Image 1 (cartoon, rainbow over the protein chains, first blue to last red):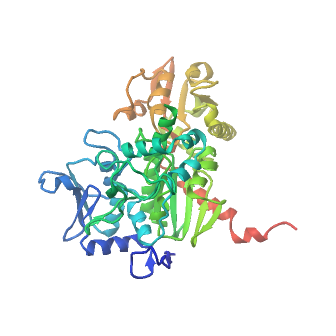
Image 2 (cartoon, chains in turn orange, cyan):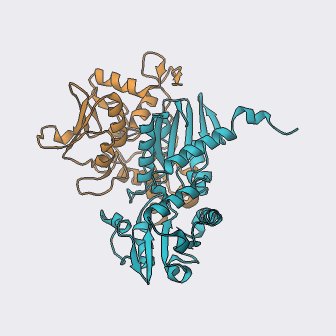
Image 3 (cartoon, rainbow over the protein chains, first blue to last red):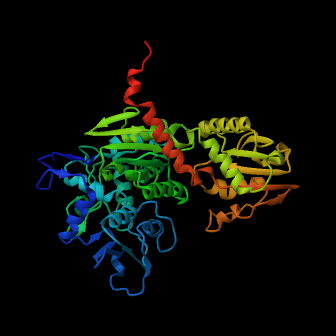
Length: 222
Length: 278
């Protein structure tokens, strides 16, 4: 059964009750001129869609891939062949284009390039995305990451400014704070703006990722 | 045959920030189950990679969701980390109009015994089991205690089935150590199956070095790492040695995932709740 639920009136940006059918929502976004997600440009073809790196828009000689599953390998390594554990890092490899036959294939490919970013954005539109402060994320850690709870606010701010910055760190927009009353001051205001240009599907971060938690452990242990 | 067009399946793996092969079996099992079209949706999620356990439910359209940990045994991750990160309250969690059904880890299912036998036979075709020692190799530290228990359980089950002359546990870092395989094994043929969910440095390099079929290399696993599984049999210390990739890479692993879902349904069927002895 598909999920259909009343929106949260104060938060939802859609007009009607929202069905959680991601494929339909993706199609509607494309109809309205959606053409870009992260470092990927999406072009509508006579049949299906073409995806390529935004830097390769004028490039004629690209390796062709034609299965949505190929996106996994394309997303896995940067131009130097290094593994990309963080798929929203601004280091997507160049030199390829991917052809997908239909909307389901497009959704699948985009979920490999930017895992969960379609769904997280839809939840945000529906008012269902609850940002989690860093203190809450660290507070529930156990085992080797429990020690991260000792990071100070200023250490955390410095770390976030270094690790999450859009130029070299992560392209996601940050929706959470260090604590309810402690904002992040080390990054520019646009890093916290969930809205975007009309043709851009924003990449949203509602909670610190495990990579940042692991970095916090290094800070505390140093 | 399971058919659940109104349900979603999430396969949860550990993942790694340095080794892409860690998540590979989870991705491959996910893709195979998508191809079979048994579920309305099939997703995967990871502790160390993306989508994370905190993100994945936002990608799910269905209200009925099965979660199967792609782990070799029960342990810290299946009992603590996954339930905590998915905010589960028990085997069956109802939240926001959605039911999340948390299954046992794939590696805990009794069918694992069949998979190990299948893998052993597949890498040593025509080799008589009655002249063969089969090793199930685990990591063997306190951190992985549950997987060591699971490996011992599988060895006992295979012994009961009886095809192999010897079935032995061995570990990388505790006794009986796989480095002493030639002392432990009495048979002319030796099959070694790593009891891991995915391949990585342990199966590509560490165990081969301990077996004496590879030299220590200073670098990380390379694109040629899988070659170590393609050179069977190794003629070493007077035996024919056959070395398998991690059991979690076995394509039949998807059957175990489906089995765990069936087992969950059987254990939580409504009729079970009324069949309580008086």
